[in-house]
Amino acid sequence: MLTVDEIDLAKEMLSVLRLMEVATRELCGQKYVTGSKEAMLENLDTRFGRMEEISLLSVATILDPRFKTIHLNNPYCSARAIRLIKNKITEVRNSCDDSNSSSCHDSSDDDERLFSKAGNIRTEKRNRLKGEKLQQLLFLSSLDFNDWHLE
Image (cartoon, rainbow, N blue to C red; front, side, top):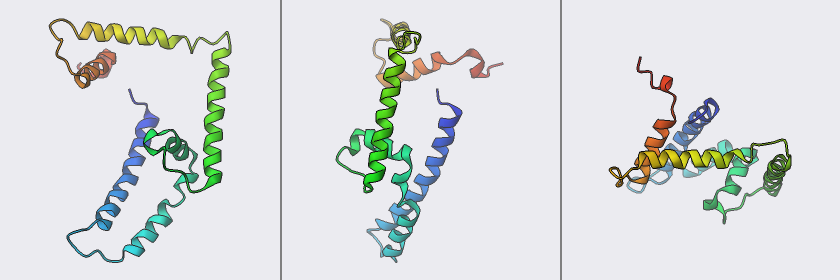
């Protein structure tokens, strides 16, 4: 289930992506003559040229396997993002090594519960459920009754 922060982030990304869609449609006009492509590119560079300086976007770019052959233009931003990733990995390892922390061991219990729920949903009679539909049913079963607003 999405948190409030994730929903806010998605709304912000949607506004940025709308601007990118307009720019893409303008730049890729094959059926008509587009005016002032250089001005459009300059405007895009002004607005989005420093995106790799945002550490969250740099980390996401480095971790996304689709962009493994694309490198960040600014070596300082790339080094900072790699350092953030290494620090996060170290932090997670240290928290798992801590004997008082049970957060690393709870995930297997969660996995077992999830597989058990999936087994209860996908029965002999419902053996033709596709993965997407099963995922939707698992999500709906994870919601609390009060989240349905049926009363």
